[in-house]
Length: 342
Ligand SMILES: NC(=O)c1ccc[n+]([C@@H]2O[C@H](COP(=O)([O-])OP(=O)(O)OC[C@H]3O[C@@H](n4cnc5c(N)ncnc54)[C@H](O)[C@@H]3O)[C@@H](O)[C@H]2O)c1
Ligand SMILES: O=P(O)(O)OC[C@H](O)CO
Image 1 (cartoon, rainbow, N blue to C red):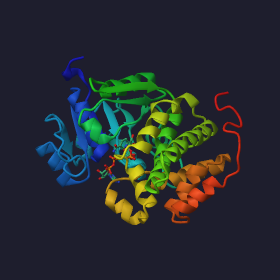
Image 2: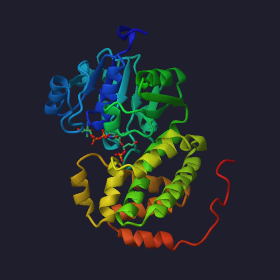
Image 3: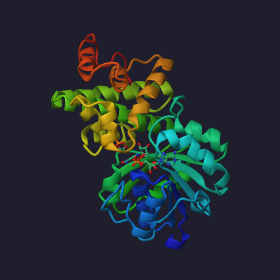
Image 4: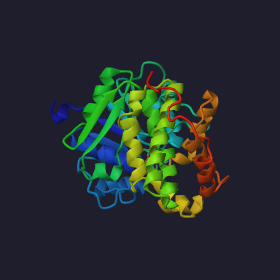
């Protein structure tokens, strides 16, 4: 396929991840337009080839266009990639629905659930866009800054529509970026959402200087919590043993570029949540996701002690020290009371 045959891609959301993905896709030769709300930011990207707030100092490809006009971004697009925070996901889909070219499928790289309902984002997308629109989720271990800098990255695209899945993966795949494919949207979305909650837990432990054993224990028991909720929700275990689960869990629990880990670190060192969020200055999805994870756990009768303690610390109902005491006081039990893999 020559550059001129490649479909136009509209990337909606000009934060760090939307900008990094738009830059990646533009470098792969797709005509690419990034839509954002902030005129100053859009002007800096379109004219100065830099996202000065979210990816300062990183040169964006000259071919990447940016606009505040949703109709302009979506005109003639062959593929739409939504990269807004989860709280803005439904409203962004409602805005794009009447403007979407009939042949354009919709993918998203947002991680989380619909706040207030706990619905999966693919359920929200199917309801807003209606039957027959190809949908895909893009997820996996990927810090925006590293992708924007061209460092090697692997992630995964999941869709019920194999052809659309390949189209999305083709746009992302390149010399420094491996895009795998799968068809378990439920498992992929759960992994991407829940790792953010577990990253807060490991951040808190590291902030309290509880040591490397505690960190490894939390990651492993956190993976166990992800696997158990995933099975109850109908996802496949192998999805969570891959990039969408274990891969992203390890990255986010150990990498200081993670906003969710940094929130935990600050709380563990005694900061208030308000100060920590202000200091981070970007979206921290775990704050809403912790509530939705515990809502889903309650509906399905699943016990998730780590996620529950994170939720309670984020609400200010307990201190990090009380959360630690609660976890350590739990009764001794079998590591796997029953097999998770059938
Ligand atoms: N940054 C990463 O490394 C990374 C990697 C993978 C996934 N994600 C996910 O991508 C999503 C976006 O995160 P981000 O890192 O780009 O966040 P960010 O904080 O860097 O930027 C958020 C962007 O969303 C925009 N926004 C906020 N509310 C909006 C609304 N109502 N309508 C339109 N735009 C709105 C803001 O203006 C800003 O441009 C999140 O779900 C995040 O978990 C991020
Ligand atoms: O900065 P975080 O914690 O939102 O993590 C970013 C990505 O989701 C990592 O894959």
